[in-house]
Length: 161
Image (cartoon, rainbow, N blue to C red; front, top):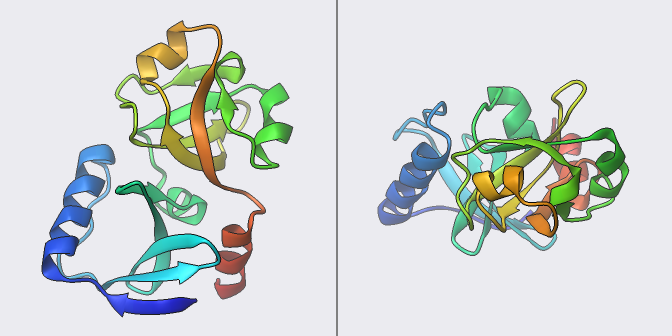
């Protein structure tokens, strides 16, 4: 982990505000110790010492361990069994593989991808289309995958657990 440091008050407010907007079930305390760092090619945010978010295009994307820890219920995309092996290798999520999506997903916002059978998270990324379009369209990309089970960030976080 490189360049680890605490964030400024202005950044903290932006961070907490965006997390509350996209994941209303999460309550990050304003007194939490929030830091930023670099892991491999990822700009990450740590909350109380744990890597919990990736920053990409001014969007905070939750890490898979964060999703597991907090049982997120919003901004999800559910994929069928046929899509799992592609996503597990870092592929973007294609609309034909989607069986369900949160209608509140906004284009450009954070999303997490889960498998249909057990509801376990596979990946996180940025929505390339709205949740409604994900459910109603028949073709195209739906999610730009940024973090998935088994990637460099996953391995780094797993070592520190």
